[in-house]
Amino acid sequence: MSSYPDVRLRRFRRTGPLRALVRETRLSLDQFVMPLFVAPEGLRNDELPGMSRLTVDQLLRETEDLVRLGVQALILFGIPEDKDEQATGAWEDEGIVQQALRALRPRFPELVLMTDVCLCEYTSHGHCGVIVDGEVHNDQSVELLARTAVSHVEAGADVVAPSDMMDGRVAAIRDALDDRGYDNTPILAYSAKYASAFYGPFREAADSTPSFGDRRGYQMDPANVREALRECELDLEEGADALMIKPALPYLDVIRAVRDGFDVPIAAYNVSGEYAMVKAAARAGWLDERTAALESLTAIKRAGADLILSYWTKDLAQWL
Ligand code: PBG
Image (cartoon, rainbow, N blue to C red; front, side, top):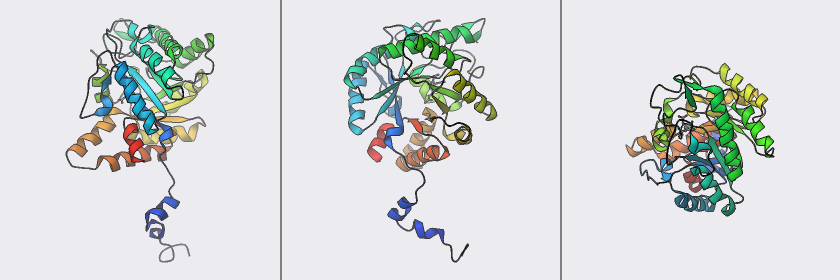
């Protein structure tokens, strides 16, 4: 009784309800986070709606829509009015993300407001930190990142997510938050963030393409997985509450390795390039967006992610 013809795996595949009974992985909207871009001026992107820039007013309307559809969490990215060497727009009180948080917080008390903590959208050169002698200076950058995280929490953020890949930033952020009494605010660390080609559409949306060089001096080498585990271990030691792997689809093995290695919540970022590839192929008539997106997101969950950041979150709310 252990093989064909006694065993026929097709028996449980015959109908939708039979398949549902034995399904191992499910998508549920309450584990999805919708990324949104806030800017002084809006910029609609009809081809990649998830990459549009919203003014604070538009953001409020969009959030109302999302909440009505059942979305429970957002992550905010900001494009400032002005960029400079010190990324002032990232940490100043009147920064665009801070303004957005102050507008959202009282109107949506239940909604989880996450923020991406990084300097690249705010520096004149587009790197994720401060440049000293032609290189991104780790410790000076960390100081500004901690300042940024505190200002986000002061303005109403529930969770901060540092995405810069500087060493020691999680500890610095934890200390800075605790010093001000924010010891209940979790840190979702982009622990294994790779120097990836799949961030292209994001960088256009966020206007954060480096003006010289690339990010390989701080983001991870795509060839490495053991190093990802070290990053995760260090971030946990520094006080991270949850770990993120980014991008998601080309790094499912990394998600699985981190899932197997650590008993903490694992997030995966289904990045702009992953979204754009499916959109473009669907537009060309080569595949069906909805089924390709659902398959991709299911694969990310199956690999071991608990929560997923995805530009499909709004669509998903309508698909599920
Ligand atoms: C900021 C940041 C980036 C993304 C998230 N946070 C861009 C980058 O590192 O270049 C990419 C997200 C996406 O592509 O959807 N550092």
